[in-house]
Length: 314
Length: 314
Image (cartoon, rainbow over all chains, first blue to last red; front, side, top):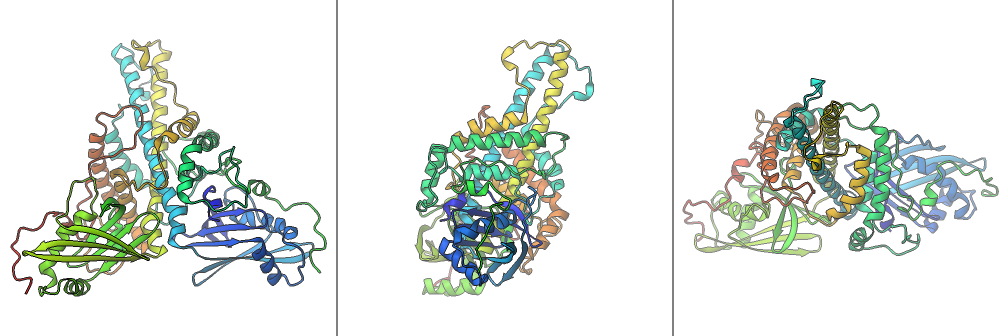
């Protein structure tokens, strides 16, 4: 069941005034939800039967089949679990309640002119889930970023070789302020750690998971979801070693998409940037590859469906 | 108790044939140990009394006080929990046993001419420990590395401005092969994700935690351990928000040390590097700031003490 969530990034959300990281997958009358405050991870996994049963408990007069109200539930719930930066707002009133190990997200909305109640009743996720959904992907992302740093350092060395050739042949700058120091990776790293890192304001309690990190996370985590192998929502759970080997087989397709979305994000980010690094607070959500989620067609609509809902309540 | 471990990096180890990540802190006749295979995290926290009691259970004829055999235990145990790349070997025979949620590291060594047995009996760590020791620091490390990437991209833009000035004033390369393309961050990222990342071999099941990542981990995790504020091993546990605020106050000292050690590491790494990024398998361990661990003087000796041990057994 957890496999559907591998292909989604964590996104920073604010639920009832609390900052959390969220991963929510909505399928065909079922959903899976992960929430974390970086102290605990909570999860809920609901089938169509579970949803039907809870909907009737919470809405005594509701007699509709699950399909009839699930699209409404999605439309009010998805904005709650989408990045707080992407401007989606939920039509529901949202309250977050923590009780012992459990975390409940209570929604109150309106359906067919009557109040519609829903509760996401999340329980503490085991360490295995935390390792698969956070520790392993984050460790892989750090390796990708380390290698990117090495790659950029190698490019700087090539720039210096070009500059040196001009200089050795007598070229002189017309604007002296454009002169750069030769890049020395060890000096650079020392300066970076002593001067720049302390000013970054990177703290251990930040829930920062920006759009680039979301793309990196998806790049290292997904792989089961290449364009040619769209998995049906009802297929069986996938063992992790399968995901890893699939990652190798289909990695290029997924990464192409992620690369493109990152590139377009970067084109916006780069405008107005100065030479000084800043923590990016992009207003954009990353454009996930359209095939990353088995239920992606469900996720593409964020506003309540306009279809008239009648006869859901008695 | 866990606070002592914040200041130590995870290191890749091989215990009895199994690859794990480890964090071990040895104090004055006490220790704390964390082990992980990235599916589970195990922990053990032992006081002097606990150690005395277990030593007598496992070694019936032993009647020495804890201090008398603890240095021997450290000398044989520490190499087991040190980076597999730093060449330390333990004089003990080591067996790893997993039983249910527990993981036991059994050591058999020789002390004063008689066999000396020890068992590290680790139990599954709760999610809170996994979040504090892995998730939060790794998330912070990714942000530091993202910002490093932005900083390097800004440097490349400055190199291009210098090159452009030479070219606009008629400078021509004597060696055409030195010519570089102007750096365009969005094109670069697209190429990086589509061409380079898939060849990196970064997988979700790798226990890679190289020396640079160890230094980054320490940089974001420590902060309680500035040179002027050496904490006694018996001080009370520190709430995490204190650690975070201390990180801001004393970050510079710690980061200076980390920066220096990274710089010297980088000086070695850079030799023989080609323009192509490679996963670093450094044989070096990073030189941790000497003040990072309250028990650092304990950690500095890795070989059995030469002091003659007599009368430990009856």
